[in-house]
Amino acid sequence: MMNFLIVMTGIFLAGLSIGTMPALNARLSFPFIYIFLLTITILPLIIGIIIGAAFFYWLPIFFMKIGLFLFVLLVIVYFFKAYHPSFGYFPYQGHQHWIIISLFYLLLGIEFAAYGFSAWFLLLVIPWAAGGMFAGFILMNKLLIHFRFLKLIHFVPIFLFIVLAFLKLV
Image (cartoon, one colour):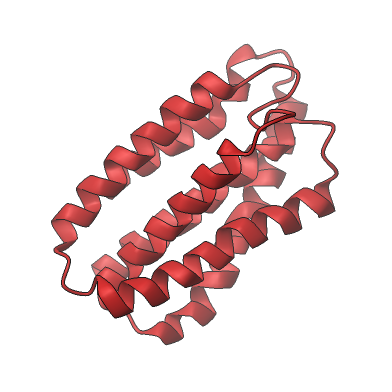
């Protein structure tokens, strides 16, 4: 039960951190970017659960946690370097950030399956991840309104990824 709560918290926190990123970019319309982010995150999550249940059920959880921790650290470094005050975390040109986000959710799905959870939990995981993304967007908008002149507010997604990295070690 504790493993299930840790994995679900990780999926929600990943959705929360990804959901905060488009709020920093005013040029993206919310409905489009939300549906696009749901597509590039939920589909790899489902594919990761299916692939993980078929091929990676034998993988020790310890190696999966270490691998996800290292990948989250790489995501932190990439998005920290990619941040631009005008464009936010999603640059105007290039598709590397979308591939990194999709690969991250694919690994989350493989981790979910490596724990041996039933595929029926997909019915719980999908709205949970989508709700985390929506909550992240709302949270970031509220923070930007209330702490408008605080310069560090733009690094909330990075902080959430750091929390997620340490959660993956638990």
